[in-house]
Image 1: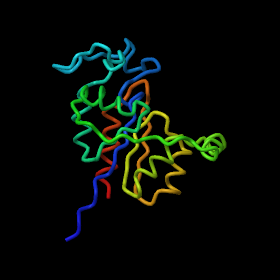
Image 2 (image 1 turned 30 degrees about the vertical axis):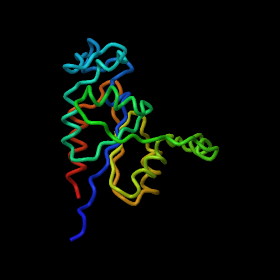
Image 3 (image 1 turned 90 degrees about the vertical axis):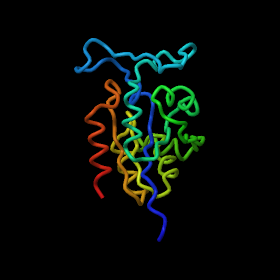
Image 4 (image 1 turned 180 degrees about the vertical axis):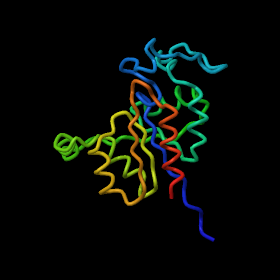
Length: 177
């Protein structure tokens, strides 16, 4: 028997999906809720916006059945600060390559997000979900044309961060062959 298919990748951004920003939305007219740091985790010197991360998101992300990968400008700081806040182990981190002149020209011409090409390269044909607050139709079109596997590019409203509706979308996509 051959090896089972690898788990889908879930590329996860921090600012927007996990740390809501940009002004409270209708469901949060009183502002953003804040959470205490996890037990035994000192909060001194940490980014004050971490308090906006709902620690209940960690178990929900872990339960997706995906291989979680940080796809954020937080880079290794996501493992130092965000993963412990969420109760997650250290996760792989996408290392962003320097943009070439061709990348910049394409981004300016088409609106393609600077993360799109590196994420498709990192997926290397594997099914993946990308959760970010900056995904556009240009990214979806490029992935559809350049990635042979299944892909869900899911845009999260940065004012709300990940919601129950977002998890329903992820679950529906993951449950569909």
